[in-house]
Length: 123
Image (cartoon, rainbow, N blue to C red; front, side):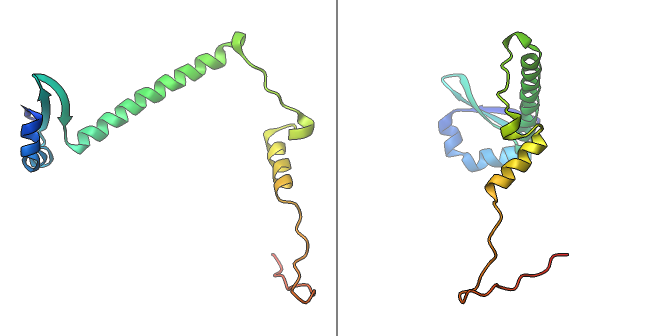
């Protein structure tokens, strides 16, 4: 980005098409000021996307550090209420038992006249 211009909200509103052209094609940034104080910036989309990625990376790093600290804090650890008879011994067992509960075996499909409908054989 090369030149940064400053203007009031009224100037920006009056010249919006020009402001957007300067930003998009001239790769300039426009700072909007109210009473001599910077309140907003109009920047090229590439700059905005890069800024978002950088901020997201910093936020992810902070979240990761907080999670590591929480996991390392055994004094404040809360035990999980896990009943192996109800949920299974492992997560995989738990998922298997839940799927059995949600999808009970289906009765054979019957046609209106009571005869069994033809089902395709699975290979």
